[in-house]
Length: 249
Image 1 (cartoon, rainbow, N blue to C red):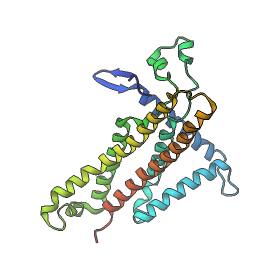
Image 2: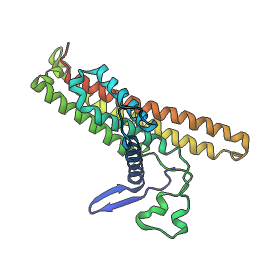
Image 3: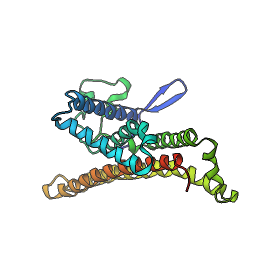
Image 4: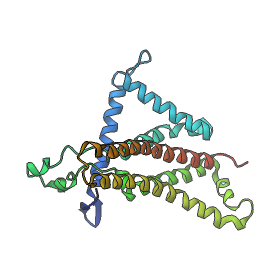
């Protein structure tokens, strides 16, 4: 699913065209989903989309309450709701068959290499690119540091030398390990899922009816993994922030 890397160049900067395109697709889908959810916003009998959005918000609010004082975590609600939705839909995008196959080639469209970006048996998950997961992890750890300093001031740095100053290197390694584990856990699970789907599609006789079942089972399992990984990333981000803003005991 990643046979060819489409690169876009802007000055001295290089961007992964396929990753950016898939990211924009996920962003557009989330915007449409939220628009449909609030289009007929009511405090009476809500529609199905409003119910779904309210359930997501209540779920994330519960994560915040479990990890910190809600008054401190309330400003994070919008960010964490966006984070869990973005990661989930990014994770499952690569499981969707690519119905635009050969569409751009048919009309001779080569602008921004779209004919290459959309070729292949399926779309691509943005989180199957290590650049995306590292960016999300760095954003989360930056938020941890910022809020830790904001709520605790200079006291936040005290925990780096607790219980004794000799533990400083260990605490620094722990701080650096947090974004690395967030990024590589998410990337590894989603990338491996896409690779396995491709391997299954290459099996002999895969288009014979009995051979469809392995692919169907793996698609269902990948959907489950996508949901779990979005939850894990969000709950760990919430837990790290909760540790940063809470007083040590």
